[in-house]
Amino acid sequence: MKAMAPIVVIALAARASAEPQIDLARCTAFDRRALARAIDRELPELRDRHFAVIVECPDLVTAHIHVEPVPADGPIARSLDLGEVPGDLRLKLLALAVAELVEVAAKAAPSASAPTVPVAAPRRFGDPRDPQAFADAEPRAGTPRPTAPSTVDVAPRPTTRVAAIAPPGETSVDVTVPRERPPRWTIAPVLGMRLYASTRTALADAGAELGLRWLRVGIRGAIGRSTDALGTMRPWLAAVTATRELACAGWACALVRVEAGVAGVTAHAVASTTVATSATHGYADAMLAGELTKRFRGWTGTASVDAGWAEGLIARAGGRDAVSLAGAVVIGAIGARWP
Amino acid sequence: VHISPRPPTKLATALADADQLRAAGDATAAAALLEQALSTSRADESTGLVEFTLGRIYLEDLDAPDKAAAAFGNLIALGTPRGLLEDAYARRIESLARAGRDAAARAALDDYDRLYPHGVRRQALHTLIK
Image 1 (cartoon, rainbow over the protein chains, first blue to last red):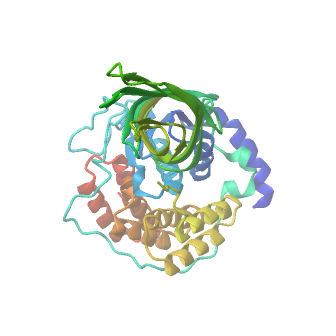
Image 2 (image 1 turned 30 degrees about the vertical axis):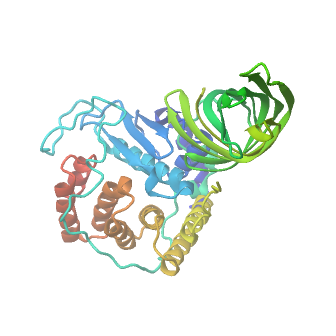
């Protein structure tokens, strides 16, 4: 069998132009190179067919797969709930589903000949994003399921697969890995509220983050208002931020964030007999944050909650702590990230 | 807030190792590894994926259609992942036919037709089971 390997490889090379293509350009939720490798491992042996398999993954738990052009037998499509398996196996599930659809498409009639097996009603394929949903993926309730022994013996290997005797690069189907790479940077405006616990000082918060590969840097400003019997105080702060992802699971990430800048309080007395003094001071805080993300077409929505400790200033009125920009702080924010 | 990736389960680890073995051409070892993992691990969300992979190895690499039919049957009994359920039904039919178990294949095809009246594999399966 090994002596046949060169012949097999040459034959495959000659057939390369007729191989199916796997289009992953619309699968933005996963690392496309990793997905391409996973699919390549699962693909069935090559066939002389002209078709493309389009894979769309709008988020980490959803995938839509369909075959173009639509075969004469009817559309071939499938939607997958990738959330059914752990995160580290989602690529595997998607790759298996793609490989199975390639197998189906390779056996389908390529021309407009009528199907020989009557069907109850033709499936419609108007929307390529979700033409079939789970209609055919889940058995109907009440139907008996076949049972099978849970363990079986491993049989000796009587045949040799092509992939086993030729270099992987020469036997793989032409998996199209788009030249498009993940963006080198992202921009993310955020709006939120921050609360300093000791004096319950709340500030409206706004900022923007530039996301780089390993770090996010940004600017953030916050302003608030506090009324005391002696006058009005307006706390504010302006800071630069640096954020690093600690770990992510699905659409949730844990982050660490530090901020450094200037904090101040502008004071106005209500009576002429009261002296109001404004102040500014250096400011820094360090926080742990949880961030949830939802991927949309072309952008990502974010929601985050930060909790940490700040060193800044405390404004006092009549011997009491009136406004605090120090101590325990919590920030809640929503934002959007492009691209 | 502490969020960290869940460590891979024993089955998931076995699946990754089996993929490497299979890619290296050792489908027999890949199947043995998956069989051992299935027999020594508790069922979890990975189990269906392992059964499906095992079925493909038996059917495509090891020419063991009886064992393939059993593996696909196990996934069907589990009912998950649903995204591969139709494929598991179809592959089981294909396995039974290749094993020469015509009556079982016809019965399985009847199940498939009833469950997936618009199934994408209907045409091919009816061509196979004539």
